[in-house]
Amino acid sequence: MSELSVLDLQNLYHLIGGCDTAYSKMTDYASQAEDPEIKKLFQDAADSAMQNRQDLMKFL
Image 1 (cartoon, one colour):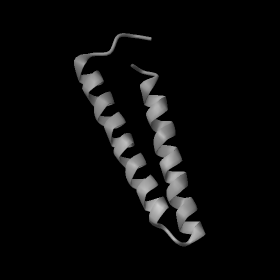
Image 2: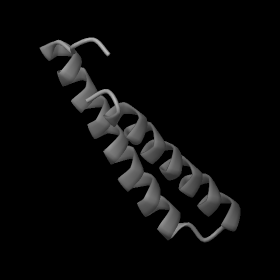
Image 3: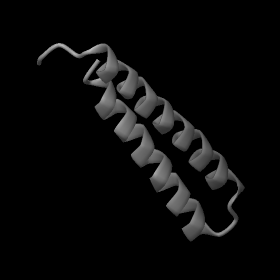
């Protein structure tokens, strides 16, 4: 893998932070949802955000 520039690192940290935020929000929304379908929708979104974070971390 080629070396990352400072700008690349800053962008990665920004994207990873966004994934963390999305995961936290979606998990919170899922815990508050009463409808099982809505709860699953939010939990799936949280799982997707965590997977995206893990994929981005591979570049560091």
